[in-house]
Image 1 (cartoon, rainbow, N blue to C red):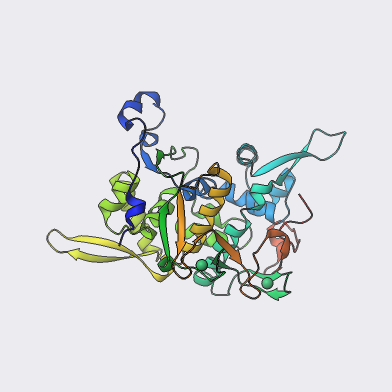
Image 2: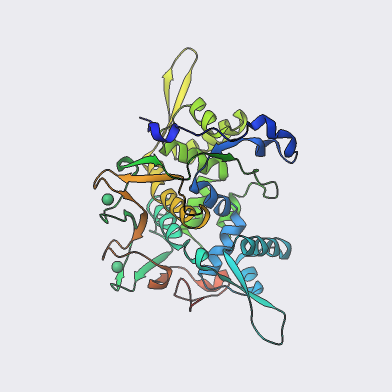
Length: 351
Ligand SMILES: [Zn+2]
Ligand SMILES: [Zn+2]
């Protein structure tokens, strides 16, 4: 059942049509879509290059050449992503000597706070996409154990899944103008796999682009049929057809015929697809903290404890929340082949 609270939407202040003349830039940017904090995080992570730059920052990269050597990225592309991520306050520039005008790029607080979402994506990738259980082994310093972090309820600390969460309108609910689908990025699925082996990359590669993220989100909210996705996302038919086919191929959805004449299918999340719930909830939590001006568009209720909660990534061994500062890792690959940084900490030193 589709939760009624989520489908109820406030009307936009102005009709979409009256706005068309304002924006001649892109046809797609004239659409309105559900206000949702997942979308704002997806805007950052669905660009493969931006994601890879953030990942290298978690591995200790600071200087231009350090980012470059890990990723084999062109200077122009790297310059562009460093600038954008600085504008978005994921990275900040720090001069590294009084005599030089050169700068380092370090993660900001909001950048470091992407770590739990990365952890959730990594665990998903380890579970479903990596036969070797993942290129990194995580060690939680609080309990000194090998840890497989899980997405949990902030109230009862129990693991959450798609089935035991319901969605309610939050103070920031409504619709917003859809972001222009970025024109500067070509299809980037393969780019996610650049550089070091990474289960986060594998997860993002399977999910794909921004539209695919949003289709999966709608499926988690209960959409299954073509027109349900289309009504909610205002997505062009050919793009929706393409993304659904791709998500079926990648094992996120399975198709089920629900009508014979004419033939119609619905798209149901597989067990793997439903397991994307955790990462998406963590992306929502990040967007709520850093992009929602204190007014989350959606509230989550945990069926097990009945409370409105914040999704949190906790250690499966000791149950404490995971932070970048309290995790170490062992690499199951040779870091020399991928730019040579061997730091065993997620965020080396204070930033
Ligand atoms: Zn709970
Ligand atoms: Zn622990």
